[in-house]
Structure formats: structure tokens, C-alpha cells
Image (cartoon, rainbow, N blue to C red; front, top):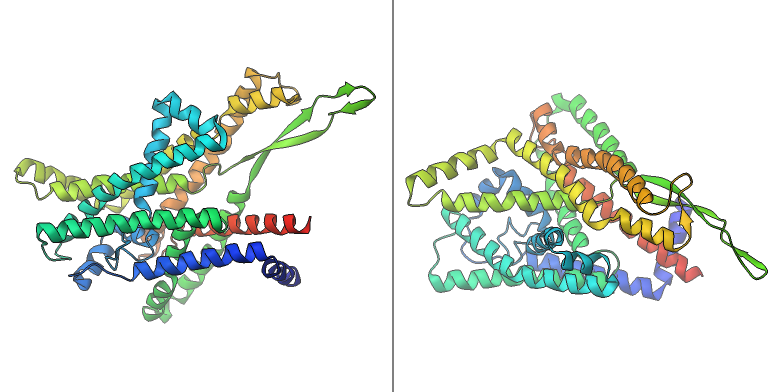
Length: 424
């Protein structure tokens, strides 16, 4: 196994195209980390750390921004506005048949136009989120009250940093290897590992050694489960009809249509996180409103969202629903049935056309249930670990773990594909 790894590593560096792509990804990540260390002026670091540690949702968003939020850096929003814009565009495909046709039926040109709309929508969303975060941090005493000119300048800088990261992510997708936005989120997760390990070392309690060993065993099992579910497929057998043309016989072969158990990947978790973040920003802003009743209602709702069990239940439900929604948007059984019928293929024992679409839809619904439950459990895993152990340091970041494993598996697949092309 180790020799196979070394041989593949040699092939990676021997391929000039693959080497340039990997170096481009590395350069993009270096730029991202450099931007994440440039703070906006006037920050109370102690107050900021305490505020983020008491807010689990913002703490998770800080991981996605690669620590940019904990530093109040110029890229503190990360790629959150672009992700939110993508969510809105995906939702609009349900209400607009024209957008749905553009995304699903117009091929690569339609998807490029769809992505362009997402980029344009990112600009106002980045401005709104920058205003919301800066007002929130001013209210919490994390940064001093700014004058109008300085406030507008900081909003422009923070929104511009997010748009710059979106551009860097798309450059990585085009000239590097893998999905650029996912790689930036992965880099943000990895950069937090040294601080998490140092915190665990400094708070180490010898009397809790059995608990630490159990934690390590559970972590290994969870990583194995993430890999298995991420790679799991439900094959549907397909047979191509035999056709005679002249003296030759075509078709008659059997293959299968792979349906992934986790068809939506990590997108539902990111969708749910973005949807939970927005009302919290609005409620924080309204809690200081002049109207007493509005401020009291906002404070009550904020308190409910701060409750771990309420937050965990909402998070689980949103992830579950978004898994079905995203699968329905990106995978259309009717299109699959139509394409199979046009190519002379059929599922043994199932009539072509509408019956095939219903058959594929039923199977997809069943396996999506497994994927949705899995993603929901992974999302609320840190809350469960804290409740079971009572220790803040013993938490397995299920969301971060799932994203990291998914990105690594995707990169390995893409590198293997590039190596295979080179060999041919």
C-alpha cells in the first residue's frame, strides 16, 4: 500500500500539468491565509474571543472563514455570501421554470450563466452581511463605535474581501484541481487543528484517560462511517437493447446506474448553517430596538436559539429537509428515464418512460432518507458529545469532519483521474 502511494506521488510530480495545478491551489491557499491575518482596526481581542466562544453558530462560521472572523480580518465573511447566493438561486429554480431549465437542461452554457447570476447576487449579500456583523460587534463591545465614513469604509473592505475570496475560489476551480470554494473551507478547517490540539493538551486531566481513549475510538469509527457513507452507492442494473445494423450487432451489454447515498454531499449542512445565521444577525440587531416589545421578543428568540437543544433540533431538521431539497433540484428521475429511453437502454423488469422515472424516484427517496439522517446526526454530533462528556474540549466537529473527508476524497479522485489520463 505504501509503495503504491509512493508510486502515485512520483506520477503526480512527474506530470507537469498536474504539478502546475497543485502549485496553483497551494498559491491560492497561501493568499487566503495571508488575507485572514489582516485585521480591520480597533478590535478588542479578549471581548471578541469571549463572544465567539459563547456563540456556537458564529464559532462554526469562524472555522469556515479560516479564523478570519476571530481576527475580524478583511475576509472575515469567508465565502458565506457566495454560498448564501447559491442557496437563493437554487431555491428560485423551484419557483422559476426558466431558471430550472437553464440549470438542468441547457448544459454547460446554462450552468455558467446560472453561476454568473449567483456571483452578481453575492455583491449585495456581502454588503448586507458586512453591515450586520459590524453592527453586531459594535453592540457587543468587540470594536468601538465608528463614524459614518469609517463604518462605510469597513463595510466596503469586508464585502470586498469576501468577493475577492469568491474570485480566488473560482480561479482554483478553473486552474487548480477540485472545487475552489470547498478547498477554501477545508483550509479554514485545517488551520484550526493546531489551536484545538494545544487547547486539549493544556486542559489534559490524567484522571480522564479512559474518557480520552473512548473519545479516540469514537472518532476513528466516525471517520470510517463518514468515508463509507460518502462513497456508498446503490446500483440500478441497466441493459442496452440489441440492435442489428448490416452484419454487426450493437448493444446487448449490461451496466448499472450508480445512485449515491449521500447525493447532496456537504451542501445541506452549509445551507442550514447559512439559514440559521441570518435570523440570528437580525435578532441581535432588533434586540436593541427602541420599541420595547420588539426588543423583548428578539431577546426571547435569541435566548431560544442560544439553547443547545433548540439549536440542535433546528439544525437537524434543516439539514434533513435541505438534503431532500438539494437532491430533488440536482437529480431529476424524469431526465434519467428520458435519456435511457433515447439511448435504447432499460431497467430489467421496468417499463421505459414514466414507469422508469417512478422506479428511480422511489429508490432515490429511500436512499436519500439514509443520507439525510446521516447528515443530520453528523451536524449535531458536537452537541451530543458535549452533553455526553460534559467537556468542551472533547467535541468531534461533525460538520468540519464531513467537509474535510469529502474534500480529500474528491481531490484523490480527481488526481487519480488525471494520472489515468496521463497513462493513456
